[in-house]
Image 1 (cartoon, rainbow, N blue to C red):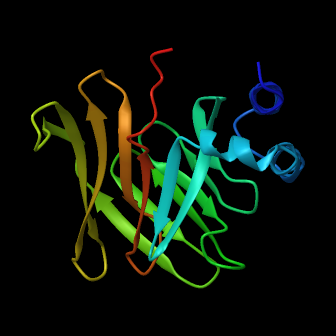
Image 2 (cartoon, rainbow, N blue to C red):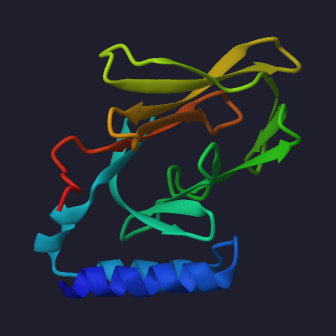
Length: 186
């Protein structure tokens, strides 16, 4: 087992023991573990976080009922299985948070703005390529009436392959995509 994988497993254990919140000590330790890995091992990144014109390869670390997507520098995206809950490092010095109030209200915030959304239930449809499904969650801005649609793409094997959700109070989306050239079949 490579040294990087051992470190990531160790870090995943820390996240599991730390509860539902990733605090700065865990994030700092995770970044240090990734940063000390030899650069030839960076090809092991299986996911890409896209925001605006920026694309960042990231690792997915599972623990405490959530997935943390992180790189060796400062990008961190937490996902609870239905919603992206936090994103940082996408814009220098800014952090986005998503809070749910019941099943139908979401508030997206950063340091300066708030986007208040009223959401319908998640609905599933067959993917365009007919080899999987897409879960969609339409949400309406409570102040402007603008509609935003969050989505989660599930491949034919039942694994999430893409997460596309509004994460910015300006209505911009972040997309987390599984790289197509990875194979987890062993």
